[in-house]
Image (cartoon, rainbow, N blue to C red; front, side, top):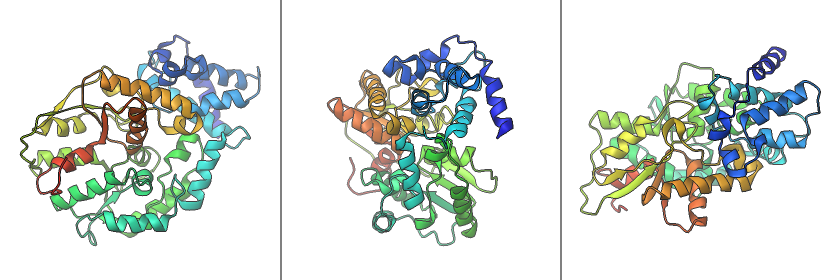
Length: 382
């Protein structure tokens, strides 16, 4: 830890306070608070490191309400490793009394129920057994990673249900992990808390089942497995990548529709796009649908605007709502009828924002839209 702390303190000295991070920061755009910017946070942390003042509640609030969208990393002209600085700072101060109560509650839920919502796993697994019907995967070496939100939030379960229907349509053999799937650790990892117990359990579960490929609809899970799990034996694939590959292989046929085109816009999840460069697969799938037309927002791909989820949603709900409102307004300005994304949390946060804005635009996950239009899927289609 000492080397890590020394490294992050030295990295902070590279910040020239130019302000480019301010122009791309969603928390600053929503709150107009300099502490929300990368340069503001770095100056606060430097003040603590240099003994100008102690680590206190105001610093903690600014540090943990950052959504870790990494737009500042993308736009820093000096190449300062901002995400590494903030991650190291959270690790250093995570065990202090200033860890936000909302983060403590999330840790408690995961410790208690092994999912971020803290719900009764038996009830959720019973619902999964009813709703999720992938092909017989008893001997499959691929597994479908459902994720906490799609597995335990009734309002988001339709995403997992749709993907299982797609898997069934394509005849793709997969295993469902059921109670063996614990939270990937994203909420704790992002907050600077240890996740080794979760990593060990999930790796043991997959290895015991002979899994060589993990397919997930969860952008947070995709990012965490890619970044935090030190393993190379299991291929990590996002549902949008899976669908794009299936399209290339000629495995997907679309239902012929006589309805007018559906105009959609696409929101790039930070954990999928900016952190891992997955921009083209979801767009290829959308553009392949014969009755769907894609209208891009002003801020897209690497310049995409955060939805306001992640830690911000828990630590500062008001700020989260303000960020989401800005994104919904941008989506509505395209004239699109639906906002499509590839992340259950993005769908949850943006759906709520769309309702508050009057419900003029629908919010869908990509797999839900595919399921409604893929040949030999559900009989009733939207």
